[in-house]
Picture 1 (tube, helix red, strand yellow):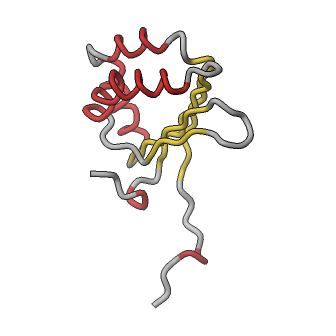
Picture 2 (cartoon, rainbow, N blue to C red):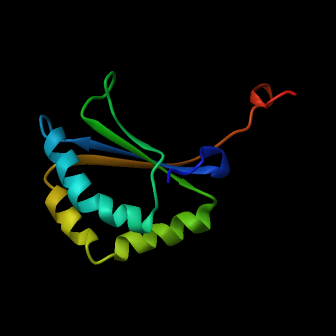
Picture 3 (tube, one colour):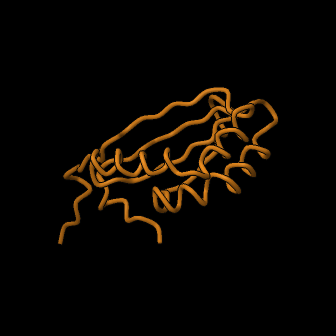
Length: 115
């Protein structure tokens, strides 16, 4: 079950720059080795995307959290999961750079339902 974005004000916005012509290999490794761990520890993501314009070879994933404490708790579970090391080892030659941002949702009055 995917998280309802409006319920989670904090989003972990991760951008991995993948080695040239290695995106398909990275996605296969990520899906096979990381996703089982991530689904168990982080829950379902908001989504996955790849860059089409601008900086290329980027894999973007978004994870939703209720607050910073939940982010830290779930991240610690991921990092200490015994199977996560296999993903890190299998992907280290594929990832050129990583960026991680925690972003907060902003409520705009113009987007509130009027009724």
